[in-house]
Image (cartoon, rainbow, N blue to C red; front, side, top):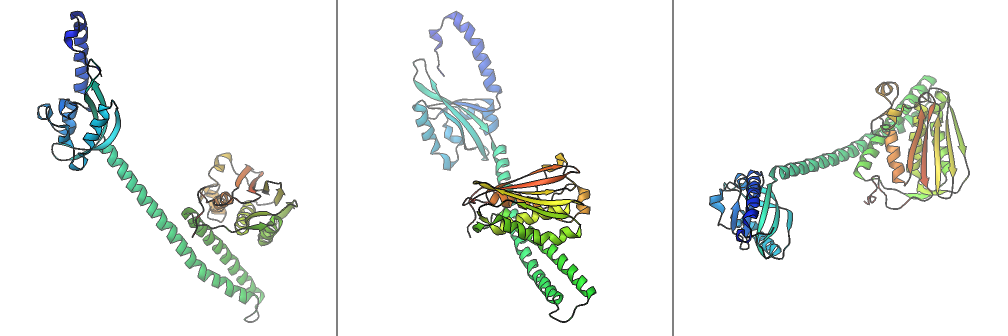
Amino acid sequence: MVLIHPEKRTVAELQEILPLQALLSAIVESSDDAIISKNLEGIVTSWNAGAQRIFGYTAEEMIGRPISTIFPPDRLNEEPMILDRLKRGERVDHYQTIRVRKDGRQLHVSLTISPVKDAAGRIIGASKIARDITREREAMEHLARANEELKRADRMKSEFLAVMSHELRTPLNSILGFAGVLRQGRRGPVNEGQQELLNLITASGKHLLNLINDVLDLSRIQAGRIDLEPETVNIAEVIGEAVRTLGVQAAQKKLALRTELEAGEPVVTDRKRLYQVLLNLINNAIKFTPAGSVTIRSRRDPAQVIISVVDTGIGVPPEKQAVLFQPFNQIESSTRRRFEGTGLGLYLSRKLVTLLGGDITMQSEVGQGSTFTVRLPAKMPDGLSPCGGPRHQP
């Protein structure tokens, strides 16, 4: 800002300037922000109504006093720093700090300070715009505290799920073990009726164990605590093991469970996690296929392996496909009543495939079935986590 002395202006020029100055003065006085000027010694030379509203001092109380009057004791070192910058002709933009009202209450303010020059271009003072941002800062701090509380609650939830899942699995494994001993007749002969009941116990126990494992994996993934064990893996062998595991389930529904596997070089990945993904996808296909077939295909190229699980099931409407990979989601509420499951299988599968450095996609048409395709790199990248960051190291 350059100040022009009135004596250097003609009468005509002054007649044009004076109304403009009155207008600018009115704008300054009506501003909600504090608009203040000071000299290079930090003494207040003007103080508008906005400054009075924000800081509580009238113009009569502040003009002629140091601007440091409104500084808290621990911020007094800011004024020399600001004055040094102004003397160098620098502008201070949106500087956030704390000031003190006349009643002693502290305020968060945002300051914009500009050097003021005279007619010769010499810096003679500064103009300052101060905006009260106390409410905004308090809202941000409240939000930050709320976010921390949410993170803490999420960590506690994950820890609770991990502990409870472990505690539930221990007795359940014992139940399955004892049921297996009885089914094998190692504690005496078992008649046909008893064998059928033991089979039901075993099937229900395994189903419950799978649900517990899903919840445990969910908590581990959300906590970033899933560790990987990459090894050389024969894809056909892993697919064959998953098919044998779920063969009885498919046979009970009279579904054809087929494989179409191309021979190829092994890949380097986590065998256990790949097997878990295949179990989830094949089990999902069997579950939602009332009749027909489920086919698992694989092919290998130099860079990746592609595995597809193709079913002739009920299919997924386009509007439901976006949420299908979210936790606790199935196709529709009525489907939840007709089909078992937590709705975690596809969510966990996508997270695990991402963890292995790949991706999973789906194509589906209502009444025509679905195809889920997994693409994995020939060698799993190092250091990946479910969220794309560094993998957790215990």
